[in-house]
Structures are given as C-alpha cells and as structure tokens.
Image (cartoon, rainbow, N blue to C red; front, side, top):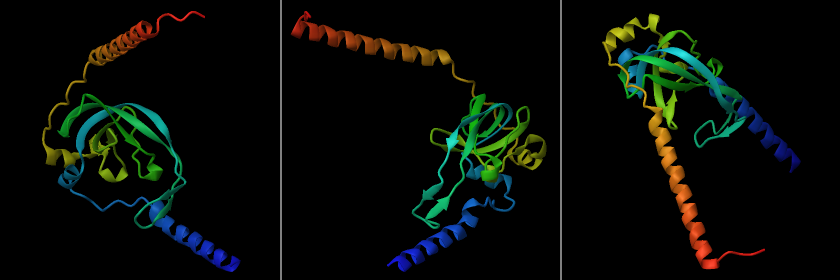
Length: 196
C-alpha cells in the first residue's frame, strides 16, 4: 500500500512540475493589428500616468481549476492600481481621471511609469478595469500605427462631483437614525421605562 501511495505522489509531483512551464510562462499571441486589439478590449484610451499604488496582496500558491492543467502553482505578488489623466477615448465610457489594475511585469502584468503617456487597452473586471502585457498597451510615442488606425477619438467624460456621493450617504445615515429612533419609541411605548 505504501508503494502505491509513493508512486501516486511521485506522479502528481511530476505532473505539477511539467504543467508549470505552461502555467508560469507569459506568452502573448504574435503581432496583432490595432483593430483586433480595439475589438478585443472593453476600453481603449490614451492618458498620462499621474499616480500608482499597490492595491493588495494577491497570493494563491496552488490554484485548482476545472480545465487542464487542473492544478497550477502561482507566485504571490502585489497588484498595482495606475491612475491616468485621460486625454482621448476610442472605446468605452471613461472619466477624465480613471484607474486600471495590473500585476507586475513578471506575471504578465504591465508596468506603467508615472509621468509617461500611454495608449491603454483594458477589460472590465470585478467592477473595475484590468490590463496586462498581452493587451497591446504601449507608450503613446510608439503607438503611431494605433493612432493612425483609430483617428481622433473623443474627449473623456468629466469626473462626477463627489458632492453627490456625500449627499447620498448623509441621506442614508439620517434614514437609519430615524428608523432607530422610531424603533426605540415603539419599544418604549410597549415595554415602558425599565428601572434598575
């Protein structure tokens, strides 16, 4: 019985080891035309990087999937959120200041540099936008073919006023307080004032 367990364990170790070359490699499809990149992305815009921050620790040493390879080993890394001052939009509804999440270049992410202008291809993901090395992002100075194919584009939408969000939160807090007051009043009428 122990030889059988050792044999199965050895096969699993070899299988995981062989599958890691595909799991850890970052291989992008060869040259893709600007129109194909535009078609595959949810949003395409040009803008200058104004800020970058680490958004969280992403760690999953072993990931189980329903498709081959069924088990992948991944490395832990920080994702980064890059904030852009958007100048031109070719696809999607983008605000003048918008952010995109990406992993580090070592894990097929894309490394943006503050102060530089880029053309960004991104997809909608979990309420935000995500991009990577295979999306076709490029410095704006090197994106002549894309710019010629897309034309002038349109300006971004202005950022929404934060005042509206504050008013909505204030209304929610006032409604909650009034519900609590109403519940306390009903409880007081029903049970009266308790003396200790």
